Image 1 (spheres, helix red, strand yellow):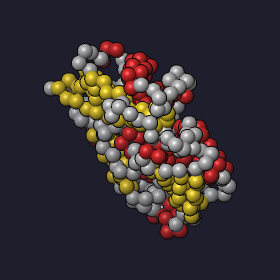
Image 2 (tube, helix red, strand yellow):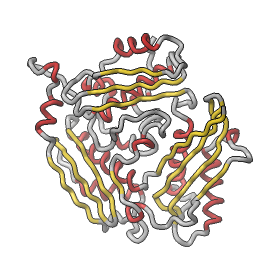
Image 3 (cartoon, rainbow, N blue to C red):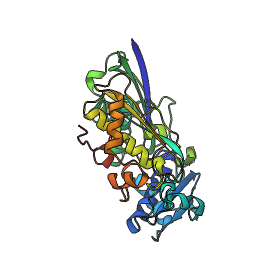
Image 4 (cartoon, rainbow, N blue to C red):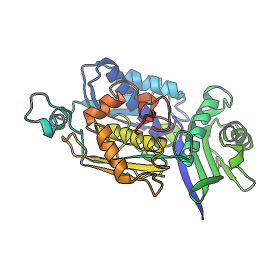
Length: 380
């Protein structure tokens, strides 16, 4: 049976990703000074201004405005007429400390309220999903894997001057045709990229096809019926926060599995690892990936759920979509036996107090070999 599935990615200059990167850069700055920093940092980007808000409790002292401007400069935003200028934009900061009510549950879990030495409880209630599938070397779904690679390449050709007329904002999209649940071919590729005003559309389309699409998409997956839409509106000069407002946490599907797997709803960027929205999603990915890597299934989805102030997960759910080689009950038992899924256990196992979060922000939080939740261990 023929099926089509589509996933999208965005470049680091997309307004929402600008906000994600600023939030994660602030988080890393606090963790560098105080590994126990509690950070829930939100960023808003709009015409000519950046707003940073949220709750931060830390012994670190961070120049947030400097981080904002340096992040915009790093992305490549230096023109207020077409997007935003790191030198002249307004920066508003409204930060308070973490709520004492939330801190009460995080600092000392319900299970250990009566003990002298408590363990950390979950920073919020919620449900998180992890996923892996053997479609790619990194055990990610093919559509989101290719979409991220296109976005990364789009940024690279801009920053390295290969296509020096490009600006930071951009989006990609890949539609994969499946036969019997196996990737068969690429049906459609969409690339929309911000550019300088005086560049002909024909040149943009020719260059993007040659320097981006053909460098990323495997030739054997393309055929005469593959469709390419490059800047389909015909013009993309105004972009970034001038073209559209941005907000931390609005690209959660691109951050995870491109819609191929379910999502619990929580965003990642700007949150320290006591927030299970982030840390438990990373752990769920680690477990799902290792279930596939260890040969227990070809496709695996894990759900973890938590209650605020309670350390242990309320539930663990395993779904292998009929691809399992051992009973799912046995897989679940292995998870319970091998892993400490309390927030404190996850933080220690994945070493999440280090300032690693800028590495996660762009081109997906999963599928990158240098991140701790992507490591493969033996579960046998």
